[in-house]
Image (cartoon, rainbow, N blue to C red; front, side, top):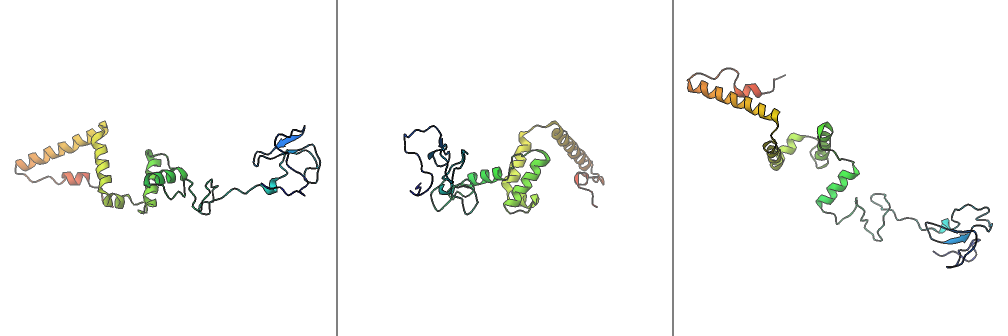
Length: 186
């Protein structure tokens, strides 16, 4: 930092010691704060060289301070070298999407699917991404939840009943398995 020679306050030279020595935490320059000048009329502890402080570089894309000395900001939001996982992690952190359980988790997942282009429509997302359906099915296979097992037992009972009716050459009763699990029409 170059302070003009005619500036009313001059920085102390390295090693120069005075009783009122103050040092700026931003620019690192020291001055004698006991000396009154037009810039420092009373001791203030404020850097008299503030007008010469370099402005912090700010990214033109994200508006955040940029510590990189290049034309391309490499902050976590703008980093052009970030891979898919890094970008996704950054986005979730910036948007403060941390929870994936319960009602908040479902809303966060819907928000994420909107971000990637599904307008919050989970059916479309699942139809377009069979791997997601398989992951959900595997989740059900991998977790032996008692309530889920009770539902499976009920469905197997219905299968047994339908087989018995078919074997006995009887028609399937009006309430078949499909009807039992179908949502009521409104």
